[in-house]
Image 1 (tube, rainbow, N blue to C red):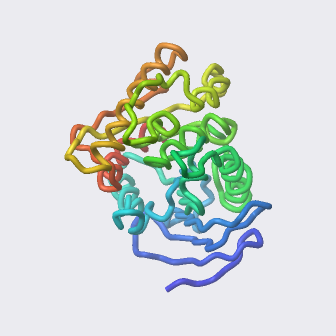
Image 2: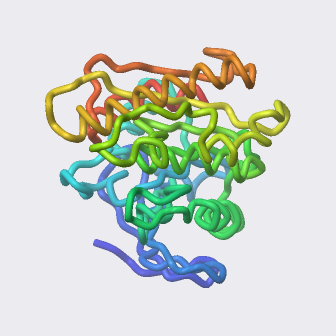
Length: 293
């Protein structure tokens, strides 16, 4: 059962799904500032009310699939189960997770148009999450608010958005996890065009990120991955293939041009059994979170 309450002048619902790791505060229309409201889940440790601890925070794009089934294939990351297993194994100290539902996914999560579909809203979305949502969470929950204790995470377009958010708002997000990220947007968006003719270093993506990437005191720690399964289906043979190729280009650029160091401030995984789906992303998360916390 869900019980209604108010926090920071916002209406929320408390619900306990029986997960060992924690309980939910769900805001159906969080509007802490002037931006359009978003639905969010705040997943807090089970002993939150009994403790005085402050917690690192993970912000997740595509919040509709973070904890519960949803999205294109009606799947989930099942983050509550992932966290329960990590806590039980001692591999991770408790965290707060903020899962943000998109309003207009392609627009909010991208930096440019995708063929005839409107994109380019990432700047406004990044500011909204960094200033309004993170501001609300830090003001109303016991967080460790520093960028070094904050992770932004997502997959596919949500992974692209996570990478860009870390670059556009580095004072908020000191850690980035971009799974199967859509770095191909704006470069290879047309499936009938010849792919990969333009190098990633000449893209709008890098233009937007260059200033932050060149500042070692400001730029975030980065995790990136992609899957290597190619089964003839569009999501794996087109989308994941292009995520792989552009991810490999960006990995090399981060090392050669911006002097990131593998396994220090840059972590890259090529998953031989990985597909473009929540099932693969969920499987990789237990190895990702301990890299940051």
